Length: 169
Image (cartoon, rainbow, N blue to C red):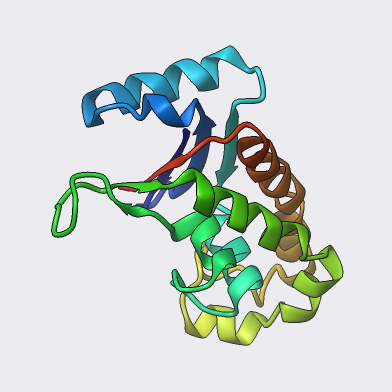
């Protein structure tokens, strides 16, 4: 399984952790699992920090797309507690992880650069809002620097048959 944590607040952060699909943790276990994986520094954790929303937009052209495979890379999965659950944690099945991985491998940095639209990103309040026009080139470079690690992370998870646990808090 891969644990993905997205906190939607002033310090918006995206993180992901990979563990075997047959060991999907409970909500209480997930936090401990995530912390342990980040501390291990063994490649089983991915941190995208504040670039998750800009990267999501560059991959999908939308603020909150979860229909496309690329949209699911950051915002996908099903509620951990079942349909109607109030839990912020979501689970992506290993089959979906494989499909997302293939979709990510089909995208090139030049594709993302062509999709960069600072005016639209500001209009849609793509996080971190307020930087797309003022820091145009620097902001794009910063976001693009996190794309390959996302691709590599999903490739590894797919290769290992892992699922993904996502959360937005």
